[in-house]
Length: 144
Image (tube, rainbow, N blue to C red; front, side, top):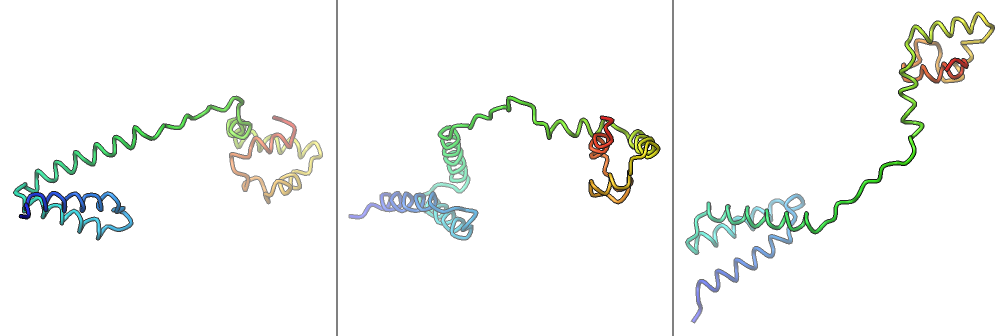
């Protein structure tokens, strides 16, 4: 004689196993269909959908917690030396537009071809120079 509860239990186990193999992001239609089948199996066995949702949520939470605990958290090593590139913005921001403009004017009076200096940096004129590059301009002028 076939035991209906045993058949339901086996079918439930089979569908739940399959549900664990399906990625809901890659195959949402199949995933939702499997959820509906499990809900229907529970409904046939007399369990309410609310109980099913609660059990599924608890089961998924336990599985997620187990996965998180199983994966070690990688350690992040701090760099031993300061990164010179990271220090550059502080240096660049140390000069104001007025300071750099005044230094360029003073250098021009002293015979420096300011236009060529800026073109060598890739800028047509001082207004094209971003504030982040003011420190580099001052370096070129020897006033850093």
